[in-house]
Image (cartoon, rainbow, N blue to C red; front, side, top):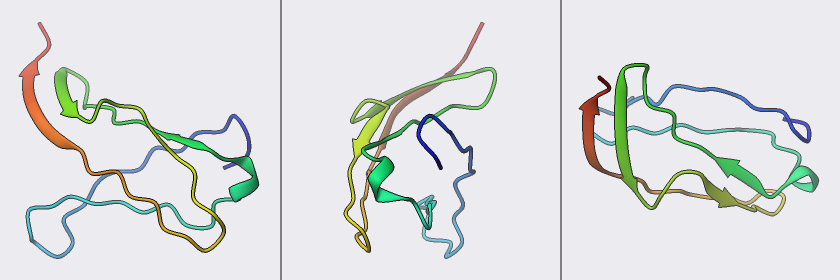
Length: 77
């Protein structure tokens, strides 16, 4: 994404290991650092550790990882 752009992508468990993952490819690292934000589905409130958004600043060709652990989830009244 360009500076100020955002992308929404869904997590997937493609290898059935109960770990949901996603990947952004071809980021222009000069536009970083990047905020990675976890948005819960409408009607659901979640708490994660570490807090969202997380900031990543990968160098060209590098991988950046954010490991969120779901602490709680509840329906939004």
